[in-house]
Amino acid sequence: EAEVAQSPRYKITEKSQAVAFWCDPISGHATLYWYRQILGQGPELLVQFQDESVVDDSQLPKDRFSAERLKGVDSTLKIQPAELGDSAMYLCASTGWNTEAFFGQGTRLTVV
Amino acid sequence: GIQVEQSPPDLILQEGANSTLRCNFSDSVNNLQWFHQNPWGQLINLFYIPSGTKQNGRLSATTVATERYSLLYISSSQTTDSGVYFCAVERSFGNEKLTFGTGTRLTIIP
Image 1 (cartoon, rainbow over the protein chains, first blue to last red):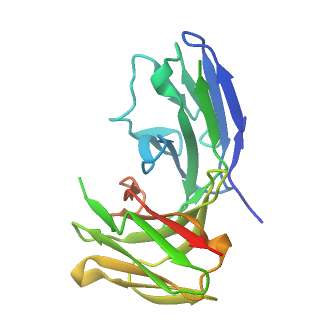
Image 2: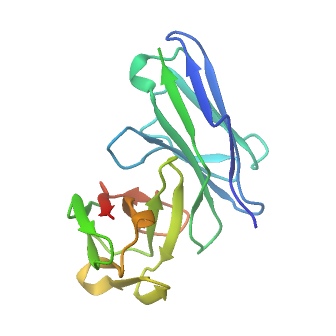
Image 3: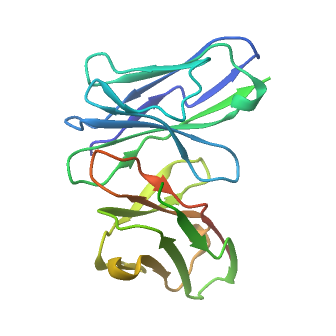
């Protein structure tokens, strides 16, 4: 069964360090999302790609966060430098045209 | 942007009871999904239901698009049903983000 792959599952990093997350969407899905979920809240969009183009990054803190999807397939989300407030679950999702979105298992980030 | 409200925020039930979770949204949508977030944080797809009614085992969902709400029904609750249930909507496919509600935390007591 096709699924969205994310790695790592868990990441502990010290503040001011750099951290990167990887996502491989379901094959053929043109739209890829990165969401951040703070404990007790619903997921909130950080960035949305359509193929290799950014559709929406209005909520991405661009001074420290960056995202890329160079070949329109897998994607990397980077934080540099990490801050204590970045501790959260980072979720990747993908969808095709007129189809439901599917989420990966997520990366739980702890900044110490 | 579109607003999504879920109710109740918390629900505690005895095993075997039935429950109804509600999702209200502020604009017309082309996509509505219900998810169950498992204890490890993964969002599990329950229903893709922009309109109409669907059933899957003990779970069913109804979306009344014209009145901008959706309901998730869980019958004969089991302890494994515990967790957070999210409703998420999108106004137009591929062009807008999937916007989530704040979730309903369901706790099933044995």
